[in-house]
Amino acid sequence: MFDKISDTLQKYLMPIANKISSNNILQSIKDAFLISLPFTMLGSIFLALVNLPFLNDLIGADAVASLQAFQAPLQNVCFNLITIIIVFGIGYSLGKRYELKPAFTAATAFICFMIATPIITIKDTNYYLIGNFGQTSIFTGLIIAVVSTLIYRTVIRKNWVIRMPESVPEMVTDSFNSLIPACISVLFFFIIMVIMSKTSYGTLNALIYAFVQTPITALAGNLVSFIFAGLLCNLFWFFGLHGNNLVYNSVLSPIFKSLSLQNLAAFNAGKAIPNLLSEEFAFYFGGFNGSFIAYPVLICIFVFFRKRKELKELGKVALIPGIFSIYEPLVFGMPLMLNPIYLIPMLLTPVIDTLIAVAFMATGLCGYCTGVSVPWTCPMIISGMITTNSIMGGVVQLVQIVVTTALWYVFMKVAIKAEDQKKKDLVTEGDNSNE
Image (cartoon, rainbow, N blue to C red; front, side, top):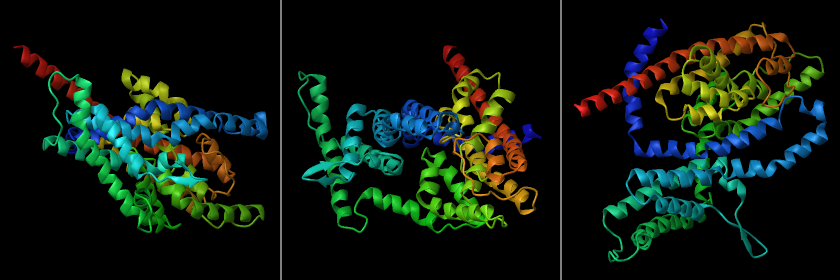
């Protein structure tokens, strides 16, 4: 049955995959996130280490606080400057794909992004806020990098460049050739910056962020909107954007935190817990956590596809972060990002997980989340038992893992078949060219 499903999916998804793989813009975005991977990996490892479950009990709250403060500069660099890396990466990769001078397109993209980034003035001194270069500005940086490079390319194609004699050194020639396209790109975003400063939004980033937030803000604590939020969260992850920050942390967190506090108050008073949906449900049963994809994918890698050397090597790197709910190595390393074969399981995973948990809790087989919070890095099964104050919470998560592992097995098999076929086609083309 699985083989039949795999063949059908391959038939309909591969044309879409091929189209995406030939799109310069999408591939440049993918390249940029791969460039950022070593830094997000480093930050993720340290983040997991200082947020280990029950670390407070082992070394004390003061020691944990000291460790977290000690590694805070590392977090600032690896996570809060991620947009700058991505802007450079897109500018470089897209410039290279368009056969431009990638160093100049990358620098132009960076300057355009900095022009559009607000400055604050304190005692006659101008400052950039480091938070403006983090996760909340990725979407803005992505748009600016693509648009600035397209403007650059358009100017070059129209031949609006300064020509230098052949005797001039190449680097000098490249600098003068890039002068007009770079200036036009920067001036374009300078005008955008001036226009935005006259609006209620103030900045381009605020405008884009508001348009991302507006449809999400309408979401409330009901099952339909909760499932939609889970879909939206993973859709952002598919494009390499931090879905949790864009969907949950920025808007939904206050809503579900208040529901959790109501549950905690009822639990402490010995009363019936009122809310099925809460912050703990979202993170430990509803799919708003990297574990819900990391666990089934890692199981597939080490159990069903252990003979695939490239997957096994990736699995070794992603295993420890994945256990503690950090699945960026899989998003950017497999990659799940911008791979249409994996879009369907990424969207279905939070839906399936939510429905399984609701089925158990609504029927009374498992209690609601009590409002007791655990670190988001807490491994599955353990987090389920603690947040529901029952062994059944761990059982629910185990069922979720089993069902979603079957789902991911089907689609990973499709992806592997497609990769093998691609390699065979390349070998065939090579043999034909030698004849």
